[in-house]
Image (cartoon, rainbow, N blue to C red):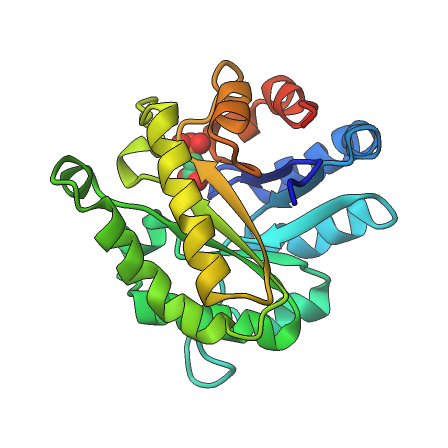
Length: 251
Ligand code: PGA
């Protein structure tokens, strides 16, 4: 059954300091709430860990949701500097991005670690937004599906009983570069991910997003022509006017 609304994720990365995050919600929550109500779209904003608590408080009573950008794959213990999923849930975090390519690239996250994070989130009722994507080389060598498969299989194992899942297809080379694959490619891959999920996760309602250089000018085409359930935005989510125009799009 085709869904009638979009899901939008703003990944602020490390671009919005604590005071700017507070300022953002103070200034824009009312307007975002209006958009969420009139479109029915799901809006998820992912600030850094330190801003989560204020962000949750700022959107209380609205349809805006707050997500984290990462969590530990361990439940608790001697892991200096890590943040546990239990605390995220206690703070009111409803979603959490996992397996972002920047985490994989710069912090050595493996597919198994990502699966561990998904397991921790599942255990506390936080919906993981799972990022998968291939490198430019894999894309050029026609290894996209095998690369994505390697990322998906460990995740599927921990999601067997999941009721819902969000997967974001983000070609690594499209992130922050302004360079996108064509809409046919996005349509083909996301459809393939959907079919895989239908076979592997028969109990889950799966939403498949696209991410990587989404802009005001391409968002509509990507969502309509590639039939994705929404988009994950980095750079463009930092410009409120542009972000607002994208999340206002109706399915
Ligand atoms: P971008 O980032 O929109 O700036 O390309 C997307 C992402 O990192 O998920």
